[in-house]
Image (cartoon, rainbow, N blue to C red; front, side, top):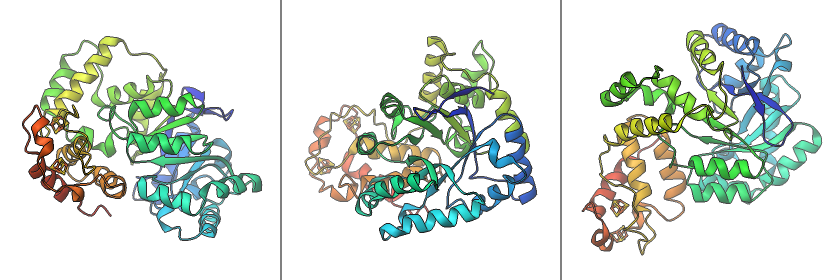
Length: 372
Ligand code: SF4
Ligand code: SF4
């Protein structure tokens, strides 16, 4: 296992982090999996209040001395907070569930536009500071699904020690993206990567042409290996979480991470990943190149962002995060399709001749579907 500095905290963490969102069905298997990971050098475990009974199972797995083998990260359910005191109430419940007296890294969960307003309204900042003073948490952090602009606003608003973002070979320019990763790292923050395979959808929806490219490439690696390698190649990507649900998957992941050193990819390898991404993008429903010639819309509609989310959502049916971003960030910040008055101004500038208002409506229908 390879280890790396966790931002400016002084902690040294394994580059592979155990994501505890998708535990196996049986509690015994889940406990065996956690302990296997910790026995093989993993020292970072990530869960959340809302991951079913994950906190309770993890608490059991960390008995018998295993708690001392891992840094423990969990997350506050911001959407349940209705007053300042609720923050500590949930944290106390989590300490009980996890059977521990402190959380190493405590995250405010899923900061899109809506949850970010709540954090400010109910002063999540002084809560985090107070909990550090009381010793209930050691480090303060947030997880994020939203736009790059919002990510920078959140990062710059407080002295966070870590940001957890979605990043994978398809998301270089989406959500916080690589630019967000580098922005946070420059401020001395650790950055933890989630959704390295978009919950497995990158494997399940991989176009045949992308597989052909992988088979033809001189360096022989599987799609999963390339996806992880692209992430651990970036020195700013501190920990890469993987939510394995079987022991065999975990073992495969640990093999891949044995040599997870930064800066191992050549420029040829990076171009190869770009060509794989292009094969996914060729499956897009709307031929938007993201050139932004249609912007700004006088009514604030974020046309390219909405088309990107729609293309993702239709390419990977059943994957909810694009709908989360649309409903929790794009619409409440006044950039959604509900603002479109169908004036048609944008269409005059689109080099792809996209019928923008009509396609926006189609996108809204998909992105506005329930995700919980
Ligand atoms: S048609 Fe809609 S998206 Fe296009 S410029 Fe007019 S209001 Fe904006
Ligand atoms: S001008 Fe057309 S192709 Fe360019 S971002 Fe707007 S909709 Fe997409």
